[in-house]
Image 1 (tube, rainbow, N blue to C red):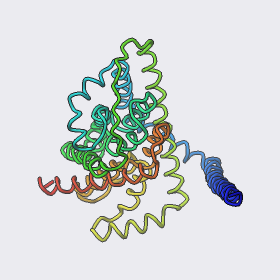
Image 2: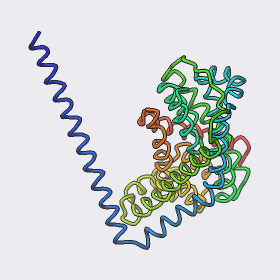
Image 3: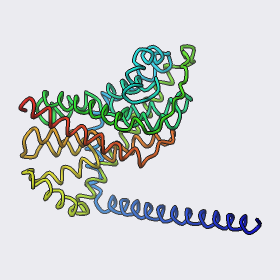
Length: 345
């Protein structure tokens, strides 16, 4: 008996040491990468300044006008008890499709209207308030983390691709992609617990708190976009992405899509920059829409980091979140291709 206890203690001690060693290696690698980035900033200050400026310009023109008001007013709706009314009417649909709790219908609606990263932010908030469990937070992340209509139709479809019709097709594909994604993972993270929502109209300083919270959140998004633009330009400048671009160019070239690799890798890192690069390529509008739909569904590393900033508070599994964002992108691309072929775009 004593030997068994001793063996268990030794095993736990070794496991803790292994975890510490692994964590130490990860921290060392991250530190080296950060040092390299700082060195590049010192060596190429003009490139870095222009990159940050471009990222903030995209944020100010495309993201801030659409994201900030939605963040502010959705926060107010939360404080004034609107959730219980909308969830009561749409509960059966979300239960049937996603096997998800009542609140999912509200978060899904706000995510579709507002765009990234409002869905992730709301999941985190309601987990913190005790309205959804950790399992439910993971489930909701499969269909409640979406882009918004202003970005897809306005920024990508109209401004970048020069075709408002294709913007609507991409939006429909994106929303249906989220629905199919939720259905795909409906048997994952099952928790049948339901929480009754309280009307919080007596919340003090609702207006002030909503404004402060929204400003901080939208500034956080802007910071991630600016840093993502900087990292992309540094990677392209140093040629680190060249092998990946070469392989992707060969793969896309098999389908007659020359030069897509560079744009695709940009989009995997930051979706706005990726779609902007795709818009300048000499390929069909359908090809642009399909590739853009995948990138918007996936969200890019920048969006993933924004979402993770909120979702870590809800203990959402980050590997699972990344995988299901890839499947969301695949669903959106396939649906977009189908609609384009159906209507002869």
